[in-house]
Amino acid sequence: MFSQRKFEIEFTDEQRQRIIIVNIALTSLLEARWYPIATMVGQSLGSMLVVADSLWRFVPDVYYDTIGAPFAFPVVSLLTGARVIAYVHYPVISSVRCLSLFICVIMTS
Image (tube, rainbow, N blue to C red; front, top):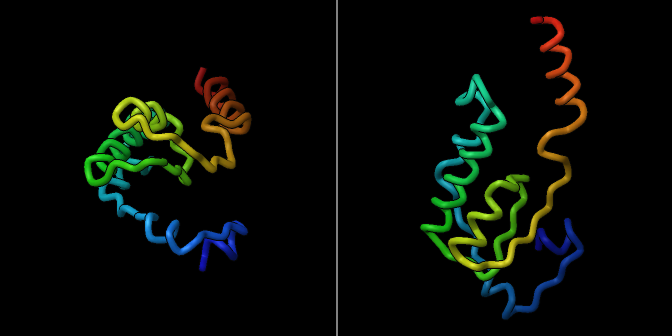
């Protein structure tokens, strides 16, 4: 099983039967191309809409985020009361992004 090989997690047969994976329809709202101005704000708002749509399809006991959309966490908690677990391997706004914004501001000033 993928989870056992990749994450060293082993599930019982009963636990495996309870795992439900939901296909998310509105993932295009997470793409930067839709937000040429205020990209991070747009993607953050888009992530809240994407998670609201997925919660409409299925309400989980535990919400496990693997795409790093922390602005969706309050939506999950407020709408469902589900626990939120996340694998986020990078900050939403990194020091590299801040530096690139700073350089752009200097060049356009």
